[in-house]
Amino acid sequence: MLRYDFLKDLDDSTKSLFQQSGRFLSRLPLCILPIPPSALSPDGSKWLHCVEAKKEKEFLRIRVIIKEHRGATITIHCDSTEMYYKYIDLRFQVRNSDYVAVTFPEIYVGTSPHMARELYLTANDFKLRGLNRTPEPAILV
Image (cartoon, rainbow, N blue to C red; front, side):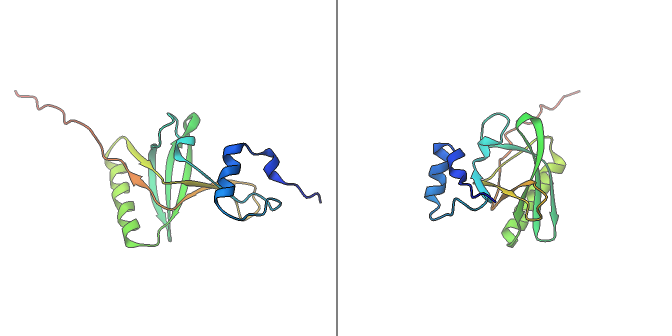
C-alpha cells in the first residue's frame, strides 16, 4: 500500500480551508470537506429549492435540487426542540407551496462509513427564506 498525500491535488482555496481548521493529517483518507451552499445551487446563489422534508429517528432529511437539476439529500441531526419546530415549519411550507427556498450555513461532504464508496451531505442548521409573493387580486363579479 502506497502512502499518498492528497494535498498535492487540491487547489489553493481548499488548502487554505484545511489550514484554517487547525491540525490535520494529510496522509489519512479525506473524510469530510465543507462547501458553501452556492457551490451546489443551480443559479449560484446560496438558496436551494427544497422539495421534501422528513424526519427519521433523530435525523432530518431535506431533499433539495442541486446543479444540473439533480436531487440530493442533506442530513441534519435533530437534537433540540428548536430544530424540530423549524422542521415542522419547513414541512408545512413544502406541502402548501410550490417553491420553498432553504440555505445552510455550511454543507459538509463526507464519505460513507460503510465502505459503500458513496458521498453524503450533512449540515448543522438550515434557514428557510420567507415567501415574497403578492396576493392575487380578487375578481369582482
